[in-house]
Every structure is written in C-alpha cells, then in structure tokens.
Image 1 (cartoon, rainbow, N blue to C red):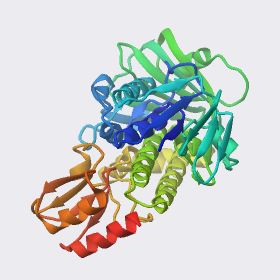
Image 2 (tube, rainbow, N blue to C red):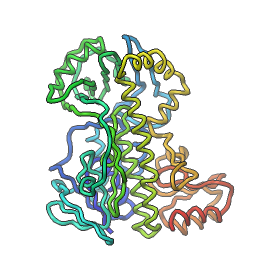
Image 3 (cartoon, helix red, strand yellow):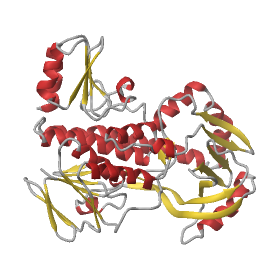
Image 4 (cartoon, rainbow, N blue to C red):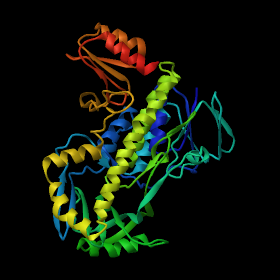
Length: 457
C-alpha cells in the first residue's frame, strides 16, 4: 500500500519519515518548484524535538539553533515578567523551519523517499479501495494525507469546512541584522498601549526575528514600519544593517470541521491555524503527523483494524482546540485590546506569571511536554512518559517488564510483533510509539491483552 502526502513542510515530511521507517511506501507531492529558503515558523519546542528525533531527523538542529534562557515581558519601560527556562526539562531551540525541513528531507532520502516538486494537487477522487490524486497526472494511492498548509487544496477539494475568526488584522515579521544593546540570551516582548513588539535572537552574529502588530490593511513596507516601531515601542535605538526576509499577514484562528473524510486525512496547518504566540504551530503539526503515522502504519501492516484511524481525530483535534484556545487568549493578552484589559494584564496577571508554580505550568503547555491523551479514545492513560520520551526512542512501542521472559512480553509481541522494544524494570507498563503511556497497572497479562485487543480489533 502507498500513502500519498500532499505538502513537503515539517508535517508532511514527518509523516513520510514515520511511515517509511515502518516499511510503508509514500509519495510526497508539493506544489512548490523547490524547497523553501525562508522560515515563518521558528521555535523547535522540546516535544517537537522529540518527535523529529523519533524519525531520526533531529541531528544537530538543537546545537545549530539558539538556546533560549528566558522569555521576558516589558511594560512601562521595566520588566514585569521573566519566564526562566534554564532549569526547565526538555531540549528545544530557535531555528528556522527551512533548516528543519532540510534535515527531514535528508532523513526521507536515507529511507529511500523523495519530494516530487511542482506537483500541485488539483483534484481528488476516492473509492473503497484507494485515492486518485490529479497533480499533473493521475496518481493512485491507498490513502492521502493533506499536509499542504492553511490554504490546503486537499481540504478545499474534500469540501471540509474551516471555520474561524481573525485575531489581529495585520502582523509584521522580519529577519533583520540589527546593531542594538539587547542581550541575545532570550526572547523579549514589549507590551504597551500602542501595541506589542517582540525580538527573537537567531543563529548568527546580529540576526534577529522582529515581530509587531500594526493596525490596517493593504501593502506595507515591513522593514520601514519595524524601523519606526522599534524605538517607539521598546525605547531602544537600533541600526538596521540588512534584511533577510519579511512577511505581513493576518492572524487567524481556524479549525477544520473534521480531520478525516474516507481515505483522506488532514494534518498540521491544513487542519488548524492559530496565533504564532508561544510558537506551537509547527510543533502541533509534527505531533499530528507522528500520531497519524504510527496508527496508519499499524493498519497498513495488518496489526490493527481501520477503526484505529478514528482515534487520530479523537486525540489530535482536542489538542488543537486547546492550542487554539490558549494562543488566542495569549494574543489578546499580549495585544492588550482595551484599557481595562491592559490594566489587568500589567498590574495583576503579569506579576502572577513570575510565580514558579505558574511558570512550570506555562512551560508545560508551551513546550507541549504536559500534553495528555487521558480524555481521548485510547484512555484512561495517555500522559507523556518522560522516562521513555526523554531518551527519544526510535518510534517503536516500549514494554517495561521485570524480565525478558515475563508473560507480558509474549502478549505484547503477539499483537505488536517486531515493532516492540522490551526493557527491564520493576513496574510493568507499555508506552506508545509517540512516548505516551498506553497501559500500566498491577501485573496482569489478561488486562494487557484486553487493552491491546481493544486497540487493534
């Protein structure tokens, strides 16, 4: 069976690598004529790094990126909140999406795959046996993954609703070389009556990602606007030495009505778009890809029935709902829409965010290390298992048991075959390929059998 993947961004490439390393052939189609050289997405969160490493594509990305020690908020010319990251668990970095895609393409090539550029999807037809995609020519596959971004052709062709609302009418981004006195060890955001301004250090001597909201619509000179907004909103002076990339866009909050229609699935920005605040877009997309890939591979390889694929939406759409809700609130909070909202933000909420317990919870949400599937269709477990996930295993199931000849091992191998890694430990537990706890409890091969039967039947 062949899986067709529309879109060669981080989501599509992660799905392709996840499928191919489980022996499932893929064809990756992208409308662009070649790889992107610029990056809107920037932050590789700790959980995103774990996902990419489980398909063996992480390499030296964390070392080449900028390690961030803090996120600081300024209001009224003084720091009002500093989120300290030095001692938080998890390994992430600021590095451009284009570099992440390059690493994923390299891994795809190692697995025997490639991206077919210049393949815009113009029509999709499906029947009970497979899917035909028209992309310059008819291409037949057994399943189709729409990972082709917020303007997804696959989503539109499948007539899947994508309701939502705009959150900010115009948002400016630019990667610029700047000479100014700002410390490069962290991210700084200025919050004021006139709007927000944020600065992210990028790899290089003087390269920064600058962000700001700007009311209005229509064409705009991004660099000129940022040059004027920087001193007005930060109180700092800066010399702009050069510009690598700019973008201007409207921030939307949208969520697809369904993630699946027959043999067609949506993932990443094709399924959900939200504010870039807290840097969770790309990381949510690769999480979608991993979740769908291991489930689809089990079905294709005959280890599970097609019913398992329904749990993809059951788990991942809820994650998107939480991310959309959180980033929308954060956007409204950062932009300070209204006098009373700004007053509440600056005098009550921001000071509370300095409390260690609050910061720990914020980091867990933004890093997605606190993500859980407890309320999902494969519950009642589902928390990320840090003992396994932090070691970034290779995407297999992991069974921890007292010994290799423990009866739980025979049960797990009967259902999961070679896609199982057995480790010795005092407690019995089964961890999913995505690092989340699948099953645990007092030793009981019968109970493990029941859980795996429910998963695969």
